Image 1 (cartoon, rainbow, N blue to C red):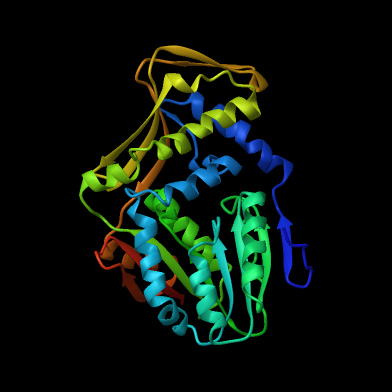
Image 2: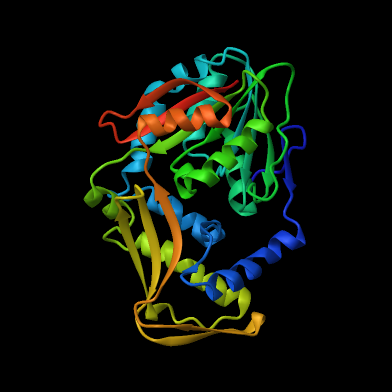
Length: 330
């Protein structure tokens, strides 16, 4: 592990005590409602973050391969659309495996770049930042550990250049249409006219392919989903028996989204000691843990306009499975 160089790496932890306690509040509220729900952001503790990186390697999970193909072929073309680019900011940066293609493309044309990764996992953020600094001499990093849904950090600017905001993968798909628009408007408010947003969006396709992507044969996605129950046991004194729950992924054609559930195999009562709470489950009762909305070109154009962006360029992988969309702040 490299020693932190304050001239190149600064990490701000913006998670407050109240935000840390929000897990307990959200679990209490979500498991007492009908139908039961849990926010997907709680997948991403340290173990969950590693499990997601494993998901990205699965043969069924086409999204990462498709988006990586786009960056391998078009990274230089993407950054060329912003000739005065001095900074990248990435929401939900994770391992930064895909953003490094863009970092490399920028540093191939200029000597320096400032990168601002924003992630809820401090361990993953630090590890990815240190790895990037070892590989790119002209890179400096200011990282933010935060829940950007609750606290949107301001973007640092180096000189009078453009900033490219990255919201990659299928992250936008985790939000309902109304929530997606609200989040993009928040991002637009911390940007200046002429800044760019590179938005990853998964496209509509047959249900069989979609459901396989979220329910792989190895069961890695199932472990990722069930990990939220393990976290409840660890952090909230739960006695959840993971063997009594199952992972389920189904495509809702009417809403154009994959729905992810944790399903109780039996009738049971779960105790959450730290919350002094008992939760009853019927056999077959589900906790709705995540959605993944799929888009078409018209929906993306409408979303850009409504959020205050001008749609500029779109890149697709060879098979037209996934889109990378460059929007400029109007």
